[in-house]
Length: 497
Image 1: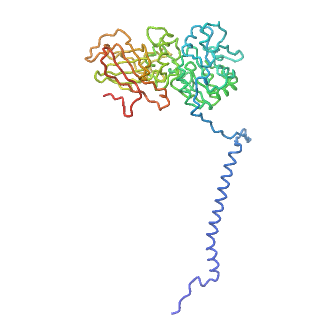
Image 2: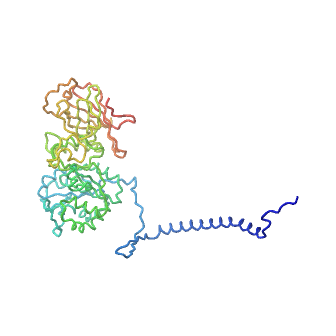
Image 3: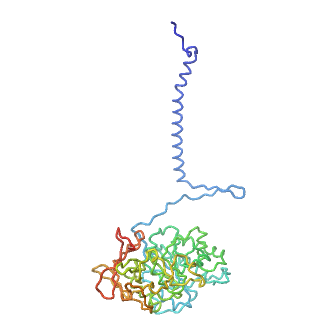
């Protein structure tokens, strides 16, 4: 049987087409490969040239296109680990008035050290004193009469005070990393200030401080404003930028009340937000600071302000005497100052709260740490008509039940044992008259003194923040409680039961 020819055999151009379709995929793949290589080369070349050339920013204004040339981004220099900030590299600018100088200079003498640098800026001259060598140098602020001020409730001295950082910068001091602003009634803990500022790169723009304890104050001014009485820090590069534009900035805000909000307004124009550090304390409160200081945040205590507005922090002495006593634990272990620890005497069902270097409190019953870390309202709001909702943080009421009132033991003395490498602090019961408690449980009034043992840890704040632990130790000493305070163990938990 004769075979039928294939269909394609009937077309003479078939062989040509088959050859064409066989070579086409090879051509296509070669083309794609060539294009890919060109794209990669172009991308790399463009990227390299972009890093070398200036950045071009195009904007449209009023229908016409404008081109602005911006410099390339500069990598931020990071501080060397071997180049930690020292107290000498911090320069203070302290706002003061001649009228109150003789009184308030006594606060400054308590925290000022010989190796520190700074200036007290006064509104006018004062007589030289025999204690001038214990204080920063004094200077008179520049004339501010050219600046407008029209706030009906404030005082134009706010303009003078707002320019203190810029005036201090213009003194031309060398090796400065930070400028710190404070008032003449501000008490600083210098070593803790160094610990806080050492966390930040002083080569960058930083505006560091804290807001007010009063919610209403923060609403009236700003939660984003550092309050100058509590102190704030400005890095050297930011201080330079501020000094260049501050006088123009001040002229734009004649209606502002104080110096703090003028600084804040200029920071806003510079685009620098507030970096909050909870250890700066404005203390816009009245009354007794016991509730605030005995439940201090887990952060270094940097400052205490409004010393003339609040009661002395230790009873039965004046304000200067009280701060002198506080200086004793500061000199031994400033990092641990006011740090709260909570533990339980489970055999007697007591809750114990230690604020190192300040107080020990014993409460009948078992209270959670969550409750104990909230400040008890021993103080009043800056706005006296405001209730507890007027504070900018959580608080708890001072108990009225006689059996739940805490027994408070204030620091009386503290020493350092070199052999044991630990501090030993003694706290004595603050005697107040209370009606008898009818609860059938152990009575803390029989504890007359509390001894607290703690190993200093200068690197406490180089680690992630964690509350220290305390442990009630057995003792045969009559009328005495012994407590050990220190770093919590890996599996140590403050449990209620």
